[in-house]
Length: 201
Image (spheres, rainbow, N blue to C red):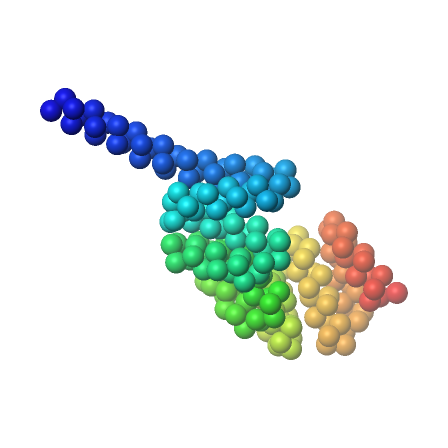
C-alpha cells in the first residue's frame, strides 16, 4: 500500500513537470523571439508541441513566427490547428485573415475578418482589414462602409483613415483622400506623410 501511494505521488510529479515544461518552451520561445532569435524561438515552439500536441498557444505563436518569416502556408496550417483546438479564439481568425490576404485569397480573408467581427462587433482592426480586402476585389462600397465603421467606433484609429484615403483615390476622390491622410498624420501616423508625398504632391 505504501509503495502504491509513493508511485501515485511520483506519477503526479512527472505529469506536473510534463505540463509545466510545455508552458515553459512556449515562454522561452517568446523570450527568444523578443531577442530576435527566431531560430531558437522556432525550436522552442516545436519542442512545446512535441511535449503537448494540443498546446494551442504553441501553435499560435509558431504560426505568428512562421508568418513573420513569410512561410504563409505553414503559418496558416498552425492557425488552423489553433482554431480546431479553440474555435472561439478570435485573434486567430484575424491573423489567418492577414495571411490569406498576403496570399491574395481575398474572399478567404474577408470570411476570417467577418468571424472576428461576429465575435466582437467593435473590433476596429477587423473592420479596417476587411475593408482593405474588399477594396482589393473592387468592392469599394463595401470597403468604404467597413472603414467608416472602424472610424465610427474609434475616431483615433489612424490606419482606418489611411485605408479610407486609398479607397477614395480608387474612386477618384483625390482631395478627400488627401484629407484622410492628413487626418491620420495629425493623429500621429507617420506613414500617412509618405502617402501624402506619394499621392497628394
